[in-house]
Image 1 (cartoon, rainbow, N blue to C red):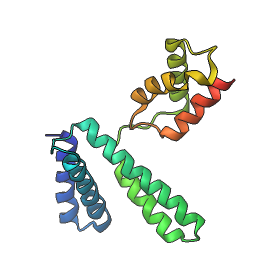
Image 2: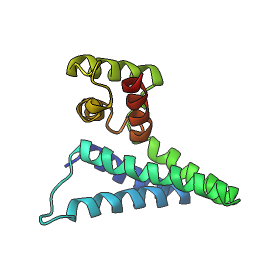
Image 3: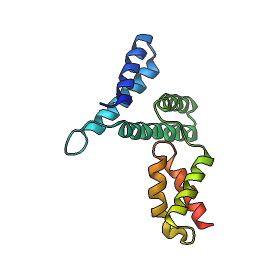
Image 4: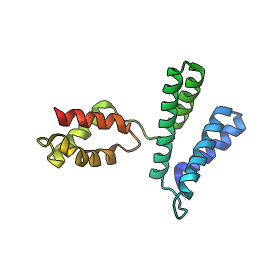
Length: 153
């Protein structure tokens, strides 16, 4: 069983005892998303910690996107609620990579694949390496944009 999933369950009990409604609802939502991922597909399976991080990352991304949409729609109170939920989910995710760390990983991947002179044709090779090393620790869209920028220059 996943240690992260156990931590979520323990934190749910703590949040229930503390009567922290927001944390309780976010953790319940996260556990439901994990359960859905476990039973998705042809056969039920137990998720690893890495799989759980992937589920939590996608849930956090949904919250950030919703907050942006609510801001654009003139609903700052709902946007703030989404940001608060994303902050709670961030407690369970690995430390995010800095821009410098992402740039170093991209440079290393470009060097490793020999993609320096190939330009955009090498995007797939470079992204394969970079995505594996930044999974759950950086926004995929931002990473792809940076890879694209470095390959086109």
